[in-house]
Length: 455
Image (cartoon, rainbow, N blue to C red; front, side, top):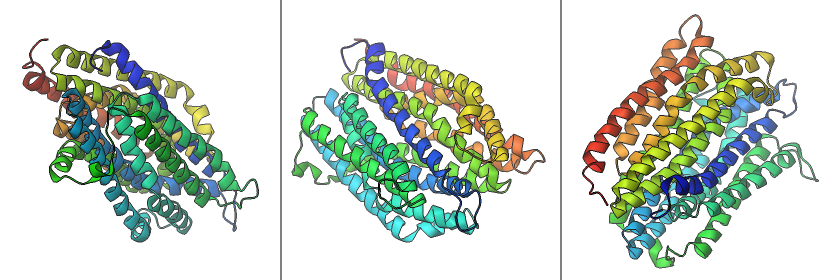
């Protein structure tokens, strides 16, 4: 990270992460595709559409679990990368150990939610008994077995912080393959197993997450020679935890805002129609292909810029920012073109009713218009995290995920042509956030980058 050409090392680190993230999005989509084909039973027709709706309502909490895992991982990633650049081996080891300790605390919280809070949460979004039952069953399993995704998020960042993104990708791929293979087996009941329906989808998901966790743990303890390991490093150190949280808390909040936005959108769109909620859920899974690729590159931007910032290399910091923004915009442009062209065949994979399918195609083509704005926001947030300006990153997230999009969605949902207008809330919010991101980036450049000495 400190010697190779920045343009090349960013691709070298970023491509494995992107492939990993895209595969993550892939098996989220596969989950929904299989669930959409759950056969009708008990006199209930369109059972698959009920199931997709249930997954849409459960999804915000799944995102929240990931938010705490990934956000804590970002704090560990940045602090560990910076400590490596400063050659502080003891702090590197203690940072890794305290990251694992934090993951255990996070899991305990979501285990408690899985035991006591799921039914209240699902009930706040729907009064449909079928959707309520399916959503509660699915989310209870995912919450109570969430240790896999939480622990994987930390070990993934430990591997990424030392540049070993290939190993983190292998771990992600292993879990994704297991999930994809188990989905039809456990949902529909093959090879002698009973058909478990929505429960089978949940079990396939958490088993895949556990496989990813175990694989990432193996690579960390066997291949991450730069990070010393031992039980003593798991002992919590208040100062170190505060330092991790100071960096990671804005990232946790940023990720959690995605959960909050989705929860709010589910409620608002529910006032328009149940089909709008289902259409949004399907689109959200599809757009993850593009956004997760952008997030993957952001996860390469952060350690590269952070490492060279720790080294005091002004030139490489500026190169990291330039290539990070450039590559992210290329990804989002490709995604925009792809969705505009292939919206209909992609959405056709979900076997929805004709009305829901047409609504989802409309949503896809409107929301995709904001992808180029979103690309700039994603890249700049990675830069802010690397420079320790988590608050700036949080401001961008607040604008694009809450402050602009939810009021606009609420307003548009009350218009006569609401089924057309509600989708415009998303690109407008991304544009507003990008304006703020540019202004904050100029401020960071003046305060942090320009004062650095030339090397």
